[in-house]
Every structure is written in structure tokens, then in C-alpha cells.
Image (cartoon, rainbow, N blue to C red; front, side, top):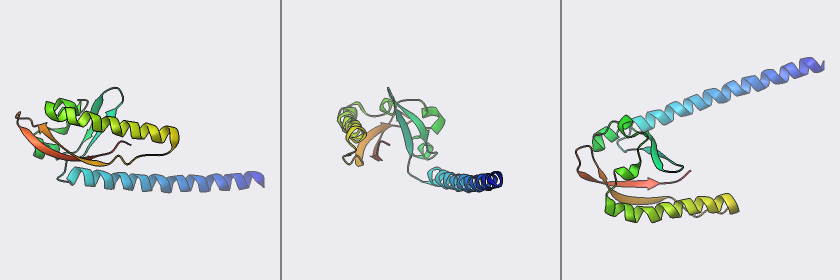
Amino acid sequence: MKLRTKITELEHVKASQKQTEKKLAKSEELYRLITENTGDVITLQDFSLQATYRYISPSMKDVAGYEPEELLGKSPFEFIHPDDKKRLFPILKNYINSKLRKFFTDKELPTTKRIEFRFKDKEGNWRNFQTTGNIV
């Protein structure tokens, strides 16, 4: 009897896992649909030792002339105007400090903020960008 009960429990767990995997796949498909069809540029950066692009939406081609693959692995700061970098570094430092505070104290300061900066397009021209950044 116990073996039959365990088998039934495992079958329920397996069925539940399959449902969860289907929901995750659907969610990922929706996320991809949104990010690949928006006019806004969506990026993800890795901030380990140096900021690098991990994901760039296809709209980067229309906005700044770059294919997303051209920027992957590069630092966003390579394309930001030098004067704007001076202003952005303290903001980034505050983001990181807030995340560290949450890690150690479970209290987090708001980190989402609209930022404006100049971004060098593929032709070498400076374009005005606005971003809402958040570290996750």
C-alpha cells in the first residue's frame, strides 16, 4: 500500500512540474514577444567586475544602428558620453549600495530612477537616451 501511495504522490508531483514548466515556457514566450517587438530598447547588463551587455532588444538597430549582437559582452559605458559618465557613476554606486543594504539588513531604498544620457550611435553621433534602470 505504501508503495502505491508513493507512486501516486510522485505522479502528482510530476504532473504539477509539467504544468509549471508549461507556464514558464508561456511566460518566457510572452516576455520574448514583448521585448522583441517594442520600440524601446531593452537591455540587461551584468555588473560583476565590469558592466557588460547580456541582452539587447532588436529595437537597438532602429534606435542607434547597432545589431544587438554587436554590443553583447561590451560595456554600456563605452557608448556613453564622457560628461554623462561622471553623472551616472554616483547613481550606479547608490544602486549598488541599496542592494547591499537589502542583502545585509533586508531594508532596501528605492532604486528605480529615470536617467538621461547621451549614447553614441553606430555612425558616431550622440543620441539622447532615457532609461529607467534597476538592479535585480
